[in-house]
Image (cartoon, rainbow, N blue to C red; front, side):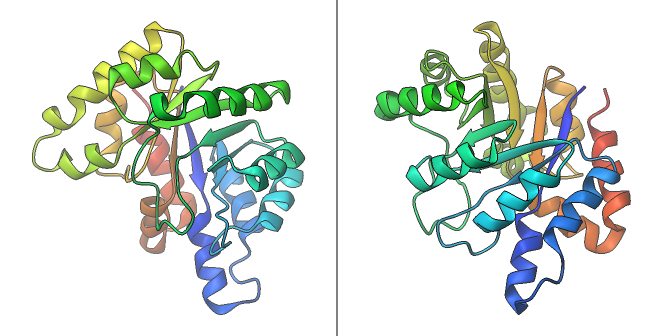
Length: 238
């Protein structure tokens, strides 16, 4: 079964635009769990322009499904993860101030750093996922880090899907099969939607988890969050 982790960053963006606590991000996350989400993802950035570190702390105390904390593993991020003890930490190579995650790790250039970070997280008993692209050599190096999973960056897949779904998925299938063969589990995220998710899942049936925020929250404006979560979960049945 492929799990659906709902990224609630955009809910926090809406709250922060006005100040106060509307919408209530924590309650929204709890409602997502109640409506069938298998987990909640947050990506607290240094400027706290959406999810804050306090949001993350609160969520870690009240969620009953899996908490996935994404981010660049600087000392502030690592301290937050150590405090909150999420089920999973997803390491993302985002520089400060970037709008959204738009590339995976170059493992060769960051191998020593990532190896050390992975060791720290594993000592805490936290599952480690690495945000990565489909290059097989890069994935092979990632397999030497001691991580548990990779999260395939699916932005290029989403961009190409409408023009040629078959061409768009090809390298992802190859990457997933190779990663699985060296003992890594497969997550995926970025620009997955109701339009392209079911095909992705059909072609990569061993998919462990998808993390979806922007498209899912946009759909919920029209469809309601409960209905939207159920529609996304249906895409993951194959």
